[in-house]
Image (cartoon, rainbow, N blue to C red; front, top):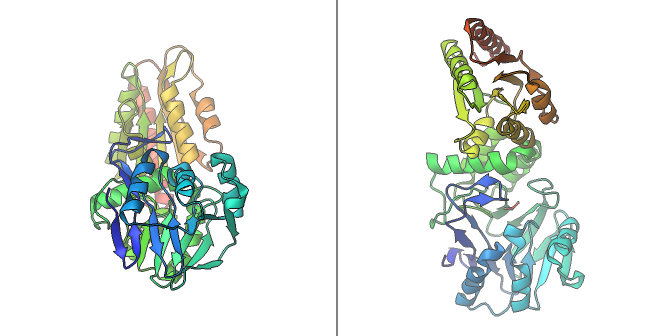
Length: 394
Ligand code: FEO
């Protein structure tokens, strides 16, 4: 992707990955992604903010060449993860005078992950400033957004916040700035759900002082930039808040349609009681959509049948992922069918160890559901109705 000018002497020099469909070999990227890198030309020094994924190094280098950049003084590293740091060694080879500017934790990680020599570093502290002459960078440490070394960089004179993973979206677009439409918001929410949700409480804390900076532009490391920072800050305020929606997620897997019948019956029983229900067949669902739904859901009922005397691995995976993403969930139910015995409750409970959830009465049945089993599902729907009333959602 050709370089793009953000403001006088400030350029986007990163790359767009239109084809990538998985991140960390785990997270689905239906709309690709980008690795944003920014070049700032001060009247005394030049700084490159973050680099790109190693697979795209040549595009970054092309952009720097096309700008005729003969000297880079500082490579600012907001985050050691390789999708942003992976081209540092190549940039250092091209610009051997450059210093890598990072906090102490980031330095240590870069030495481990990329074998960057110690003498290449300038180590900075929280709130330290670095002058480029007529432009000043301020570094603000934001641990655990996404890794322990993460930080953001504020260009004071131009009021641009280079927010690294925060406020990003996995969205390949040639547009420099985000449209403020539903699609952009869904991509940003997907990204938040998949990457940032485990760090909800840290982000909540950082939003306050980010607002105090009054940035005019937010330039994240993935996806388009935000020309109206209020739009994306407001969306994050909602996502990280404690507010919940009157919705029940029903991820399920079903080999012979018994658990499927249960899941669908429960969904109908909930809708009859004025509760929204979202079914996710785990064999075909986009797990990112499930993650998005987890952002606002108070209740999940997992449809977990038994296979080979154990809980189906797809249900275990859904529980494991839910636990890892640390959503705001308050209640978890377990339903499912078995042939000759099952330990779904113990298996699922063991996967949810970091969540502070209350377990609803499980409905585990033998074979195809009978009339009395549907009654148990009605009781479960009634139990959820009461819980949602207690939460003030109905
Ligand atoms: Fe985009 Fe945590 O790396």
